[in-house]
Amino acid sequence: MITLQFCYVMAGLAFGGFAVLSAFDRSNRRRFGTTAFWGLFAASFLFGSSLRDWQNGLLVLALIVLGGCGLLGHGKPETSTAQERRLSAERHGNWLFTPALLVPAIALLGTLFLKQAHIGALPLLDAKNVTVISLVLGIVVALAVAILWLRPLALRPLQEGRRLADMVGWTIVLPQMLASLGAIFALSGVGSAVGEIATRYLPLDQPFEAVVVYCLGMAAFTTVMGNAFAAFPVMTAAIGLPLIVDRFHGNAAIMAAIGMLSGFCGTLTTPMAANFNIVPAALLELPDRNGVIRVQLPTAGFMLIANTLLMYALVYRF
Amino acid sequence: MLTLLGIAVVVAGFAIRLNPLLVIGAAVLVTGWAAGFSPVEILSAFGKAFNENRYVSLLWLVLPLIGLLERYGLQERARMLVARIRVVTVGRLLLFYFVVRQITASLGLTSLGGHPQMVRPLIAPMAEAAAEKEFGAISDDTRFRIRANAAAVDNVALFFGEDIFLAISSILLIKGFLQQSGVIVQPFELSVWAIPTAVLALLIHGTRVLLFDRRLKREAARKSKTA
Image 1 (cartoon, rainbow over the protein chains, first blue to last red):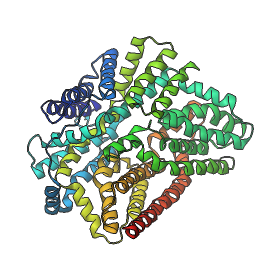
Image 2: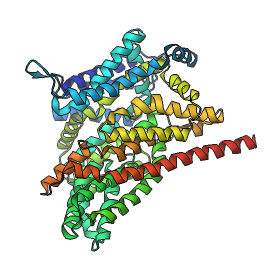
Image 3: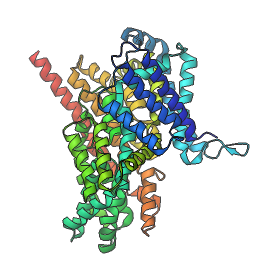
Image 4: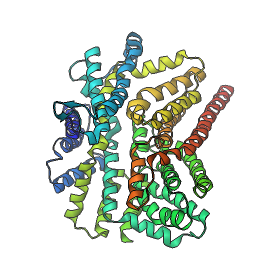
């Protein structure tokens, strides 16, 4: 059976490869810091499941120190020149898109059809994680196709992967770090404390006020937490259900659907939502870390107003 | 109330632009301390959470594939494709991608987009090529703004499209949470009420993307006048 563990091993091998190749890259002034960082990240993928919690904790701490104190450098693996790339693009034509598009295609097919697939009595995939596993399968298959077709030298795919990984740098671990911070917040009861403040100090006597506080609260809390999923249970338990639904007899489905979407307006504005806002800035080599957020701010504002008015117009009517 | 200190650390840390990893480390320490955990307990809880969230980072496995295809001219091919189609402008291209991304997301095909696998190798180079086709050479500042817009389109279209799909994680979370609280809603009701917002998102962000086109045109005109 293909499980998440298989995916973690693949990722561990890739990052382990980046670590080893970094160690030999003399063009990288901080090559040992880089090696240590990718090596530890690989170790987390490969051995995280069998390490104790405190050992994983030490590993994370080391990642924070290495990434946070600027001990990572940029390797410069040799790659093709602009001229070579143009010639290659002419020669290979639009077929070059095929491997890139194979990834979502296989991810989709896997999600739709492999859930029930069996080999003998054993299921082919771990059904709980079928989407993630299908995506990883898509990547592995597409990479195999690209290698068979283009026949690069053996280490080239890893070197090219390392080129991009070094470019993104420690930002690579940021989404996972923030998700873990969210878990610590939840464990410490941060959510209920915020809900308490919202209900104690904000005006909530009118149906309209309840909607406004709920929508703005979803957005604001999401901005702080970086994740609407963390804000939803708190705000809905504090304001949505007791006031909008119970006291003012609003429609629970409308409240919840538009409430979540109000939270997404907050996601557009916050560096805490790193995988949507900070990672692309690094991937696209923007000089301003908040460049993507800056573009999204007006849309987030308009959408929040739109959602609030929409909820008020609909929630007490159906 | 003391547990909220962690949030204050995060806000302050991001505001003064400290390294986010250090900010997270400090916020974890402060939050755990305020909630009365010992240092070892905090370390263990954070390590456990990091380990359980490894699936978040699996997408990076795509880097060797994208890097390899870039080596063979993927971005250049994307540029060539755009250069051939006469009606393409930055705004129209981004609007087209917005619609495709939103519709596919609403059908649950959220992995058909994304920054590492779609925006960096294909959409951003295409948008830059569209600008270069129309205005000739573009400044770095313009190039960066075009890239940021490409990334934003991916996000906005995804966020305000995916909730129309019945089985997306946010819909399941809503259903599960309401059920716990004794309110039964069907996923279908939730996704129907995501449609008005989706339409408004298309109108609002679509307009902004087309306005971005006009702004680029104005800037190019001004530049050619002064030059």
